Length: 420
Image (cartoon, rainbow, N blue to C red; front, side):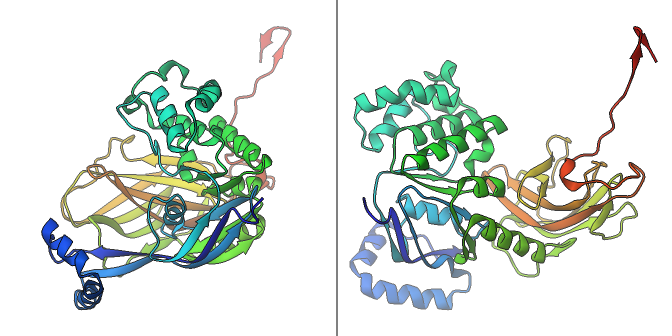
């Protein structure tokens, strides 16, 4: 058996962001390819002289190894480079520098329906994915019933995948990826699409995979799942490894990083190359004043300054989370029949969350702005608040781990068949 399943050495990935100077014709592109050494020099000079087109390093100087049978968790904030790393390891994109050695057959689940052809049925896509992995038809057929049963889409297996919901696609995609016996299983945050029961089944399946001596790379914001599944973890920050080691220690470093940077307000002072973004955000108490402390029985206000550079159809959502990443509550603008401004300019948006009666503790606020036309989303997770006990709900001291919500219940007693 090889000593390592994955070896990464000095890995880096650079993207060019901004507006290109001009569109290049095919003929010009071919000529440029023939002049490659001169082109590299000219491109670098052009990038230096063109402020609207600049380089962005999504990954820089990454080095680590993963042993066969090891489950490695990769955590970090949005934009830290997690998905870029997995795409390089899955051979979807090439690195700009360094190298990544993969020993074994890789099965990746990076996005909902990855590798599925929308016009083919679920059955046809199972065989297609198996063929891509290099499996014989007889091998796929031997696993087919197990895959379909695990996915729970038996009734729709002969329906074109384009008619599947996102949950159905991810269930079938994971079932295919995990059951066709890859030596290395790479899983991104897509498990968040499934329900709680299915997530637990997926985690159980990944434990089985590692128990069989195969390797798992697991990216997730569910820190409890990372601690429960993985034997080692990496924390990425700005494309580099910020911490590595025992999952509990790495998760602790990540939570400390989040708490240090999060507050009751956020302001973006630099220009952003985007169609729309949240310029400012702050938490407000019932008097409209900025605050990071709220009572269990009080409402929470959020003020946002939205900047629209290009008109489009936008939606927004607010999600409350525990510091370990577990979701608590979700408030999409569509559910409230609220139309997010789509015209260019600045727009102030105020939202009032109802009293949720959350137990005392620290919570995060995730704001998401979605461009419906382009199916793109910008996220902001730099706000946090503390819930304190105000004495109105209960006179005794409340234990944080007793639950999430301190809710009222209706108590009755029946005596001899009579209600009292």
